Figure 1 (cartoon, rainbow over the protein chains, first blue to last red):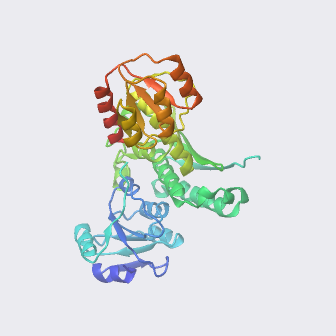
Figure 2: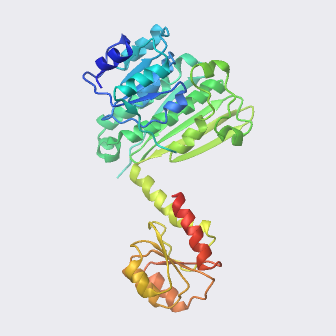
Figure 3: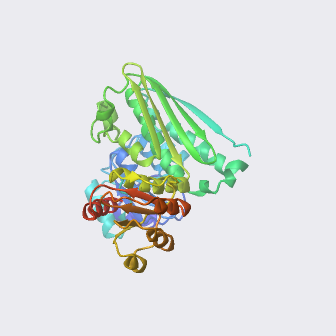
Length: 121
Length: 275
């Protein structure tokens, strides 16, 4: 799924557009607990979208560590400028939607995004 | 050949929630550039696997978050060599009152600030323990904590796990080792229980564990043909010297158990199910 489709489906707003161009997102993962997020095993060839309600810089850092190319913030929260700057520096695409997390996930799932592969440990 | 080692160090300030993850990202960048630029690390093929870098990142991030949430200040040291990446996080702070509690998933003493940022779920140390190939935690109440973790080259890790399996079997079934030339590097994939040698020859899987009460010399011949690395003798049967000598000659492990074939089989079955 192209970033453009995600924007259309969730009526999202682009906060930061610098990133890997022409990326084709296959999986998504939604969590607010960063420790939970750390358990998804994303691979470079299988780009993952991170859906979160956290607007702090930690969400960007988590994305960097896990090679996640794009982050979608839910519930239309105001994202601090520092977070956007950090995302720009690390080439992470940042989007924001006004839907709540449940609806966002549902819409994207309906459009064909799958749950991110994760390892049971 | 001399081995090259690279060391990176980053200070971490306690309660500095704004910069949580900075040390990890900076270290990750440095490690990554070492992989692509330094001749020595470029040649180590395992570095091409991003999995290693990611696993290290996860552990480092959790460890760093722990220092920021709980301690006054800390130091994050990374040692990079051709076989593994080692992370060392040492801090000065309150220490961990009960390590057992700290390792229990869900137990957390993190502040509300930390929790509002998505940390402090009480699974950090547990995550590190599960993801890293080696962890060591030492803490002194009122002084500080030191955490070490290592992420190994995938292949080394594999051998480690296989060697564990034979050790595991011997330990879990409380077996007595009869042969002295124990080669723990061998892998066991399944098990077969039977006393009829011809049945074993026909049906036992290659490289499996063989459980029997037979102790004559022929069992070694069968084991050699079927590439069976370990024979378990049930019911504490006496094993002739010749059998032991021949087993040692062929590099086959013989272990003895007190229980009967049925009981050992059941325990073995459970063990393989867990694997």
